[in-house]
Length: 526
Image (tube, rainbow, N blue to C red; front, side, top):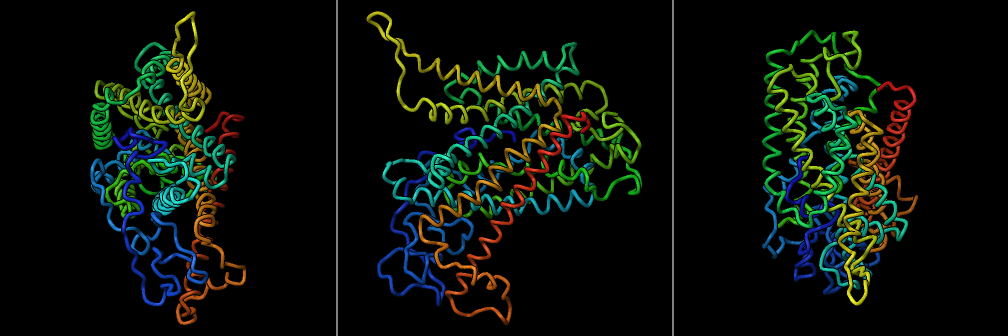
């Protein structure tokens, strides 16, 4: 999660011009037998309710079915990202500090469990983020959103508000707070522990240094001064991976497969949380997709990036796990450097290169934390303070307190982040909690609910689905119905069932993560 330019632009929202061109003279092509001949001169894509003739919202499109229902290529190319740039930005968001706890997560899942887990999570994330981007387009097509005359698509909290009202907005902010404090808190833990290993100061003392430093830097009103840190951060990350790979070649000890676990049920939830932290980049998805020239290709590009990163993470994580060894199989304590650690950097041999790795990664994560905090702070300030200015009269003069109120709010966010890092001073546990609670809550719990709600509000999408249609889901092959309307209903039923399963999966992951977290707090064993 090294922070891309697209994420810098707005993690919480979208590019201001992303909605330009919506409602332009685009046409939809219907497969034979599905078109609604009763509606004339109405822009209506495949997934409109053909039985009742309700047109699909003008300007909206469905990124879960890009070949069927997307608008044509965007006619606005200025300041838009190419497909290649979008893939690079997604890869930057995937790869980061989380990659260095993957070997430990593999040890918790076992060899087979790790491979199956990543192979399943990548397509699941690809699908659910296609659903999330569709929510943005569905929301922008609602009359209440158009009445506001906004020049940008709805942000995540605004999508929640359009779907569920004030309650949806509030629970979205709860998820964003959990994700932001957890993600940036993870960076604080990494930096404080890395620097504590290089200096006489303890990790909590480094937190006292990091907190005011990040607080003051977060007062910046523009990220332009920090723009060069993205490239430098990628170089630092690449340097760390190369050093770790060389260390594995020189000092790694690859044993027979009997010395490794194939599947661990008891500790598997720890793997799921850490893997979720790696893949579920909910706050980065909307700005990247809305800033693309061809947003209809986002699901495919996301899947490409996810597959590419999955292959790299499998190779790196598995090589480190096999090279440094399984603590339980070797009969070693979890903090023994003779086996895989929660942060694989701790397994590196002492020396100048290891010190440089820790220093460079710490600097990278320091600025990456600012990248994550900047859009969050802006969105939160707008949510609380609105657009008005707060002027204090002193005599006949007025003093603008607005910038200082914003600085105070940003400082409070940094203090809360440092408090979270102090409360959970274990790198792998922090990534587990953030992935299983914050990332998972936004992706697999809120997104399906928002999507189902917005679909129902925009086009009567679920109107014709009843319990009597449920058996259609299981009628395939020669027993499948041939009536186009029934095919449409079956497609929507399958979609609804899949979203329901993902919703249930999200709650299971949340419960397991909370159980792991509470057990770690009570027993001190993780």
